[in-house]
Amino acid sequence: MSTLHLLPVLLAGGSGTRLWPLSRELYPKQFLSLVDEHSLLQNTAHRAAALPGALPPLVICGEPHRFIAAEQLRQAGTPGCVMLEPEGRNTAPAAAVAALHAQERSGPDTLVFLMAADHAIRDQTAFRTAVDHAVALAQAGRIVTFGIQPTHPETGYGYLQAGEPLPPHGHAVARFIEKPPLATAQALIAQGGHYWNGGMFLFRADVFLKELERLEPAMLEQAREALARGQRDLDFVRLDAAAFKACRNDSIDYAVMEKTALAALVTLDAGWDDVGSWTYLAQRSADARGNRVRGDVLLEDADNNLVQATSRLVSLVGVRDHIVVETADAILVTTRDHAQDVKKVVQRLKADGRSEAQLHPRVFRPWGWYESISAGERFQVKRIQVAPGQKLSLQMHHHRAEHWIVVHGTARVTCEDKVFLLAENESTYIPLGHRHRLENPGAIPLEIIEVQSGGYLGEDDIVRFEDIYGRSGG
Image (cartoon, rainbow, N blue to C red; front, top):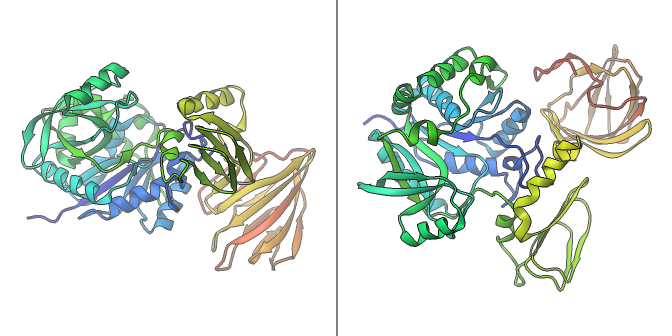
């Protein structure tokens, strides 16, 4: 019997609307530590790495998230390949390029395990057992989807109806059901044999590609072209933009699963959730009065609340069934019954052109991160952290000068033709228009306070001359 090769494919797109204000467009929920000290992406990577025959993962995400994804995989000890979509085209084109990549990488019989990077699963043993059952079916030529054991009549998920048994541990898929109204969802659960569609798929690369060629030949050809004409960029695979955007925006359910005779279902009862709103987190690890708190929180006569504080003390008095989430630049107050409406706030922020919809107070870059501490007319103060061995681009600014003060670690500074070191409590001045660079030559994080002054302090006032991360222009 040939060696088992299983490629975990972690779909890490996302717009960061439902868990605002913690999640933002440029830092969506898959990168947040919501259920433990690891991010949802890292937990998904750990789950995948523990499976038999697991190869290093393939993460598919958008351009703005590439460095965050790569760094989180590195921190999790599960480095892999990061494939960049020039534009989100739903799960069918993503599955196509993943299957082509798997076939090219480790052979046509490679198993591809497609899963969302932002879901949570509590019972790892049950998950592993379900995957073992799916592997057996996939090796036999089935395209397997996972039916989640429902715990209540949910209207936000699609449903799968189990058909005839496929020994030893599966079923054919009798029917795919769109997100139902409440009465229909109640009837499906009462009838039995119906499961939530969890959006996870496991299949042999060659089997899936053969079905895609039969059902969606144009999509397969465009995906093949996008991969073939794609470019390697550092540790990333950048799909060809024109070819990939030509793929029809379609889900794997519509494009393949509802049309193929090879669809199979394996049930999963493992505490799965798509972490689709604050309600899920409000139900986890509550205290005796039903409160779940994180950060500096003080409660008095309060019950059944979720309170998350990131930068200051948050107090609740005489409050019940509320969700309060505080960040440095925004505060959300809602009730459990209205948690799904948070995305409406994000839509209004976007319509008004406000940065709170897109940017997190802490902005992540390939070299580390920065956050704004204070700002006013003609000045801004930032806290900057540079990871060991990393360096910012060699750059200059047309409209601002900068003062740097080292508060932790050692900095190597380039300013025009001078290169020198700064230790803790030392500082330097970067005049307007001077070429400069900040580096961390040490083994510990470098932290500095940067004071900017000038007529324009926007992030687009950057002219890059040299950059190890392949960025250019502003």
